Image (cartoon, rainbow over all chains, first blue to last red; front, side, top):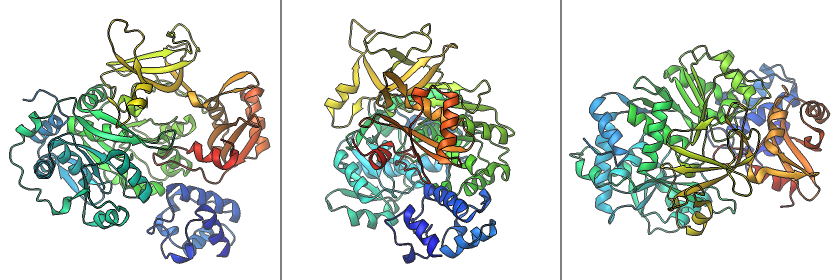
Length: 76
Length: 511
């Protein structure tokens, strides 16, 4: 989880992601962040994320992102 | 009948012809042509009662929604003109537009009013809360429409100036009418067309979205902006709402392709895709072509805001390899184009491959920049082929050349042309070559003038060495970048284009 927070804060250093319980609703991640985040976690966790899984529910919290990584074959 | 001096005549006619047909919809609301007319006339009369005279600038501070359309039309009925902003803009950005425009009023709703008051220290500007205006009074609109001249502005759009101060481009009724006349004749837009709007309303792709809809009795579906972060959501929306016409910036198409969404969600109703605003990479265009079973028309369009949306177009009529570039094509009808070399001489079609600056003249040319006569005089010059009277011509700052088919081809920004080792190099050509590598999904080439190095920023699953090897095979060695930055994230500006200034500041840093 710490690592995911680190990736997120590298993307958007201006936000404190531990403060939010829904990154998407709170506007912490825009469309370009999502694209970058997907390629970052694919590389880091050796996952292959299906485009259909790129939906708000899978990016709203670190827990959701972790679940997505596991579902996509990544090791976390 | 109206003499067509105002874009409102489109709405008047469509409200008559298609009163109960859906004109605009967003995620939550739908509005018919007759409802839109009724609400807009009511709002127009209200605004007219609040302000003195006509031709006043009015800022629209509403989310991208059906109510923005009502606001735009209401402002036009009142004899004034609009400047849209994005409610997601940071406060500073909205305030810089306020400072440049000095609007006579700002249109807000119940939700945006507080936010606006929060960051706007100047409480003297008049606020009109659209939720508090009675929109069902309407009545006759003839006097309002007849009062409008075709030289009256429709909107002022702000583009980012090179100095960082926004430039307001003034677009009049006759500019929009001239553009829309071309659009509906060159493109298959009918009352059966359902367009899917991606562009923000402050960007001029929306001019076609809105006014081609009003003119033809088509329907415009506003795809929720947040869905473009999650392309599958946007594609589902398109499918569920039977959208069949997509005019977007290239990056929106590229994102869908890079996530390979169309393999899972088939858009079998989409018949036309159209793009402009930056260069569409052929690799992702070919992806869309492969995945849209009923695609009939692909249009590549180009034009500066100053010449009202577009001044050239190319209807794709042949196959392109992934590393090729789409041509800009030819002039839109009733648009004059000149290609001028550095000495001001015209380059013609027989001079294949010779580059010059593209210059535009004709009825689509805007009146110039808001409150900036000096900048207007700098960019809108006298047409050199018109020797006996004064005619304005706009210098686009874009370099083009004719190919052997007589089509115009984009070569790059005049500002992006570099001189390196004695060669004149287009950064765009390097970008196209890099995009030809199948592992590269996004690129931007730049130049470090201090260290005299070509710099390439890229996203993709390939190493610097591999990318360099690829480039050595497709472009001359003097063009191959020597510095590479593999990025996870490209910075984008408000219009969704790659923010070159930011990249240069961050990685090159000496300018």
